[in-house]
Length: 148
Image (cartoon, rainbow, N blue to C red; front, side):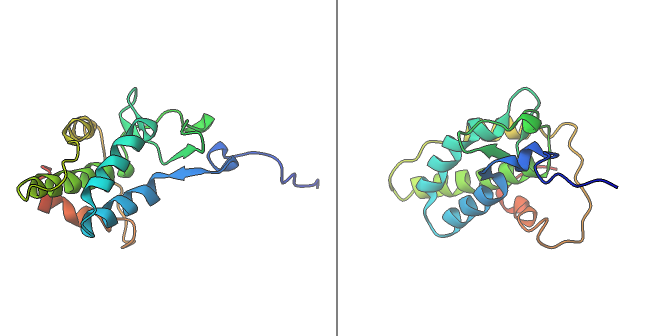
């Protein structure tokens, strides 16, 4: 029958270590909810260029340790990760605006990134799931004024 070669690479996204968007979005939300908005915004702004595929309008689910896209993940179109980025960035931005009223440390605005993410929703079709972990953040979109 033959022998399986465990060294054969079938998923280049899994070949090397890297950073997953799924963990970053949860961390950003935790920072926002715990009052560390400035830190969350700085992290969001620093990782957005690596994860966002400007050519195809989506968030990559993973980048390599050097912040480049693995070969099979160079193209990323609108996806659930893109929608979650929009929601979390909008929460951070809303919290930043509220904290500006308190004369706290100024953080840069995420409004440019939010506008970019909003424009990517064209052509996005949400997946249907009954997994409560799959859509845990999406319930928040109404509280930050994201239109359908």
